[in-house]
Structures are given as structure tokens and as C-alpha cells.
Image (tube, rainbow, N blue to C red; front, side, top):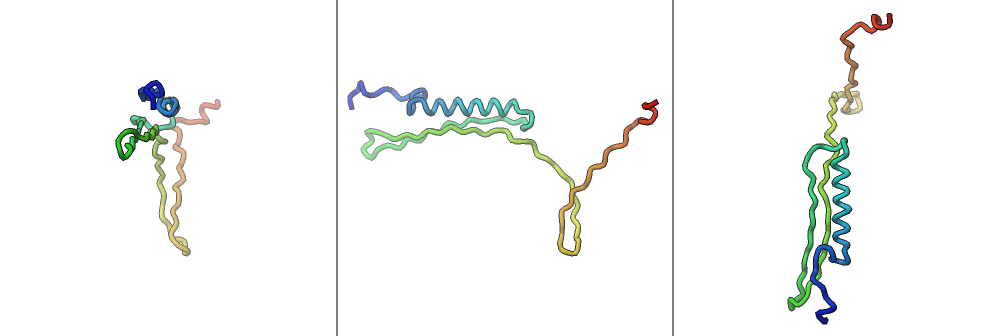
Length: 111
């Protein structure tokens, strides 16, 4: 292959810019995930992975690139329950939350 038919490989021209497009798309996903108030506050990560497989005679290579992210998921949701035995087996039962009594007299506010 002639020298003029080649160019130095960069992130910008890797597979016609496809890897850079993947990176930019994942970067937008990370930005959206950070701004989502329904996700936990933890660092996000972007992973850029390029694998180079050399030819047997080491005169060329095949490269595969991939971009992915570790995003912040929703926060953990806690529940409290009871275990009961109803004659058929054991069951997990949700505890119903009781509304707290208000610290003032509501009827007095209506007057």
C-alpha cells in the first residue's frame, strides 16, 4: 500500500470517526445521568477500550474500539416487612406506613 493511501490513525479518524461519535454519545449519557436527581451521587466513568490484534508477520493489525460508561443508578429503596405463616407457607408482608399525627390541632385552624 502506498504511503499516500494511508494516514496516521487517531481517535478522530478511527473507523471514519465512529469511535469518537460513540465517545460523544456516551459523554452526553453521562451528563444526563449526572443531572438526573433520581440517581445516586457517585462518580461516573467512561471507558474507552481499543484492542489491537497484530498480524502474524507484524506488518499490520486489526483494531476494535468500544466506549461504554458506568452510570449512577437509582438510590436504594428500603422496605420493612414481616414474615408470617398462613398455613400454606411463609409469606413476606409489607408493613403499612402510618401517617404521623400532626403536632397541632387541625380543628382549631378551621375556626
